[in-house]
Image (cartoon, rainbow, N blue to C red; front, side, top):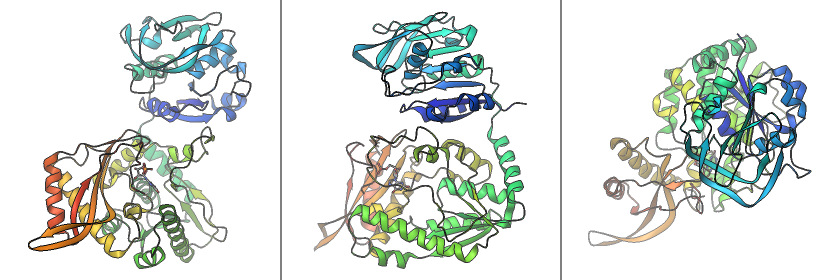
Length: 519
Ligand code: XMP
């Protein structure tokens, strides 16, 4: 049976990963390909079930804007153009695109011709999300208009005989009320996909491929205890058992008892060699006196890799593969997968994700068993492999750990205070059933000291902040409304149980203007 696949051709729009995720929600494998790599011969060779052209910031009349060979529309492969992709289809096939005096932006009432297969099963009027200035003013020959808004006469068009469809709005975002149905109609009814891409078959295939590739050789994996590297470890363990060695660097900046939990999980539940390197003191020494956030990040990152590669040098002969938990968005964000064009996105904070082994360590090759999966798919695989729920559903935790949650100099005492306070917050959120209600919540050591009173004495102790957010994508976030009574209990417990803290504050800032982490 042919493996069904839809390819998203990326013209630089901001929601392109989301389109791929939406397609995969229909159990159809989907990849994002930058338009610059969308070579006709390669596409023919890939023989996809369908193509989706994304939105993008350009105008089709701009010479420098991305275009695509007209031939692609004649391959017989179903195509859905979205926003810029729709305009590109219209323009390339002889229609007309014009620039409107004002942009159409936001939630827009849209009328649909529901006799089109694309709009099967949706009401004739609903909300879509628009974000465009150019618009299609004349459809190409052979096309029919199938949706419109008050200001956009051609909000969608189709030529079913050639399996070409185009929508000016964004079906992939949640604001488009029936966007998921529209994408499903395209994938299932236009492309004819049945949806045979499921996680069970992913695991079986991945394990077979890993066995075949690794043979009798060794594999070394850097395990951080985060979701991605944990799932990669579990998958590799299933494939090659003791041929896998996981290296876990405990740099003393993890949450309370986390290192022990990771060690217990992977030594008790999975078959592998597990090496834990405890190097907290070394990190605290390096961080002594450092207060600049970027400098701290740099030191923590560099030191981590130094310890990590030193350990690996001890283990790796020339007969080992290097494995890591890279996932699909990492590849896209690093420019390896999609548009590769990060222009304009200025660096707010440095985050590191994919590691390159140094030149003096020779591996047989790199293995990235999760490189094609989105986060929610990685979690689904993790659950099926038997990783504990709390690890699979772990909140994001920054690479530099508590290092970016302690403002100012990092010391062992501050780490301990923060770990104890943070543990109480997590404990109360869990007891009250709030642990899965928010995207992220944690404590921050503000570095500030405040005056307090205890009995007859004046105190001068640390101020801890509680940070909690809700978000879909971590690019923007709202502060989470933790109920007052939970906040009250947490505050009472922290100030009573953790010596050295006399004041708790609650961070009520959204992102932007703040970021999620304090540093
Ligand atoms: P910010 O603070 O940038 O956080 O709004 C957005 C998300 O990224 C996480 N984060 C990091 N993750 N290394 C990481 O791997 C980092 O240096 C880092 N800084 C922030 C943060 O926890 C949130 O989920």
